[in-house]
Length: 457
Image (cartoon, rainbow, N blue to C red; front, top):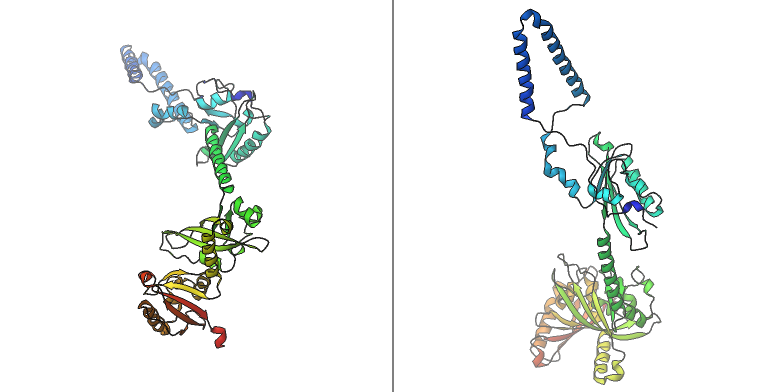
């Protein structure tokens, strides 16, 4: 695409305006009045009989001028002056505008153009100023946009287009923003179109720079030595970096289009841990989980997740920012850390729900099985905060008494058979044990929950 030679901005001709209106003069008013007085004195001095033909002629002349002015006013040729249009400050506003402005009549002829438009089109005056569609004739890419603008102008609509005009000498091109709109809302003004042409090359360059920086940031994140993913409130993976996708042997094209969910990459009930976080509205929480990630082949990989969630004003969680650190290498390089990983995997994958609670029954830590069970009891997952809320109201005192016994350091606490909270009848058996004495300030008891609904039926 080549630029039209008329787009040379090196020249700055004056704007195309209507001829300036002549302002009224008190001197002319006095001259006209004085002339009438002199004529009257002359006619009086020559006598009534001799002055009568001249008087009739003068009156006929004045009547003719008055009648002509009446017809001219009715036809719109003469109108009362609007003093607001003679404001010199307002008259300079279009000329000082950085964008090119032009007004075209219903036939497409330019009736007004400011200095910026004349400079863009290379015009010097009324004789060679051209409308927008003629300036870009022969440029196929720009012509399509101009055609749409011209169609909108004829239909009295507003439209905006952004086009790139290549330089004639092979240098960097320019980006132009073209707008068209009706001159006004009245029937007469709606026939005229206001065209605006602005150079937005710098804005486009800034946008491209920001886009390039964003691309670099994504590339850095994709090739980081650790995994990263983001999951929304519906449990869908909206982003996974290339490192994690490579670990799990997944195609990046499947991610972000609803192809993968959190349960597809987290083994067992580990996904329930990530969705069990409850926080106050507006709070930002970061939790650490040791889970097994599921590869596409079905194999598992131990990993530690740093799961960050920001909650909105309504308490709904936003998309997560989750850092994934592979623990597979730790099993060979660090035996102590490997033992910790194996214990956490055992803790989260045991078929029994386990939770450590304080004296009031508030959950301090819980495994994945308990998180999944608590979420199934009520839509608000209140049981993830307090194990007492997992039990129906009639049996809560039994569980509270068992927790208090454990907090006092008693052993051999009898199991508690209680009805679980929820819309349908479910039963569970709670086994409560005490913790070491130095840990009782934060954790008063360990509660093991085994659902016995099927055994009762």
